[in-house]
Structure formats: C-alpha cells, structure tokens
Figure (tube, rainbow, N blue to C red):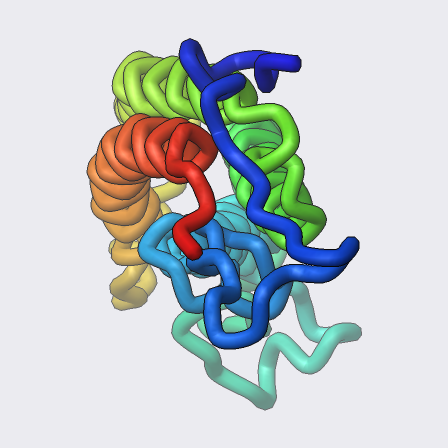
Length: 243
C-alpha cells in the first residue's frame, strides 16, 4: 500500500528471512527515524535560532513598553536619587513636577499598544518553532511527509508577514515620537538639564527591527530546508531494503 504524501512510495521493499531481517543486512536508517537525531538536523537548528530570536524580540519589546520613567516627586525620593531612566529626578517642583508626571503617563499610554502588539507577535514567533520542534521529535514528517510542505508554506507566510509587521511597528513609533506629547516632554526635561528623553527611537526598538529581519531570513531558510527534507523522506521511502 503506497505511503500517503510520497508518490511511488509503494515500491519500497521489505527483506525478511524466517520472520527476521537477515543479519548484516539491516536497512539503511531513514531520515529522522530516531527522535533524538532530529535535534541535530539543519531544520531543528534553524528552528532553535527562531526560538532565540523570538525570545529576544519579546525582551526588547518589553523594554520599549516598560515604565516611562521620569519625575516621581519628593515622596518617591525625587529629590535624593537621580537616574537616567525609570527613576526619580530632582530639579522639579510644583507645577513642573505635576506636568512632568502627566506627560510621562500620557507618553507611556501612547507607546503601550505598540509594545503589546510587538510582544504578542514575539510570543507567536516563539510558540510556532517550539511546535515544529515537537512535531519533528515525534517523527510526524516521516509518517506524514506532506506536513513538510505545510511547514514550508507556513514558514514563507511568516517571513512575508514579518515585513509589514515591522513597517507597522516603526511607523507607529515614529507617530508617537512626533506627537505633541513627546515634544513637550522632551522640552520640559531638557529645560532641567536631563538627557535621554529625546523623541527618537532607542536601542531596544532598533534591536526589534534587526531581530525581525533576522527572523525573516531564518524562516525563509527553514522553508528551503523543509522542501529538501520532504524530498529526502520521499526518496528514502522509495528505496527497497538491500540484502
């Protein structure tokens, strides 16, 4: 009976003598036949790289959407400690301190949806390769070779979809940094001599873009490996067992 997903797979033979395979003529071990060996394949390594990139995207996105920082007032040690990011600031008093707090909160709320969307995408990019690794360890591609073609299509879809996602991410951030809230906040902190509040992309946000580009390349490479894996599985299923 032909194997589903591989044309001509029914020509595979089975050599048996007295109900057992002839000694010294064991069949050639098929691709991904042993579960532990899958983790050493090129596809598995590529999927592990995708996992790593997704984790880094999550971390950088969380930094981008973290606390807005800024002035915290004297009750929160604003007059004692000075931090460049996320801490308390001296130099503010009265109306300026209240205005700084309001601007920090409004700026934080403007960036929060963008950061959450980036974290959601990063979470999806983390879950997908983990599922593929599990599928490979369970030898699903060997029993159902057509899965590799499905995997290839999904990899290409993710790689292509990452491009507009990155455009939306940076386009939205640029809109936030060009807003009147950010401009007023920047001027207020600069008037007190504080740096680090400029309305421009910071390192973590730039890193998200670079990691997204690397993820696109990794998924395209993974798609190529999936097609090669499909061909290799089909070829091995068509091989007769040699005596």
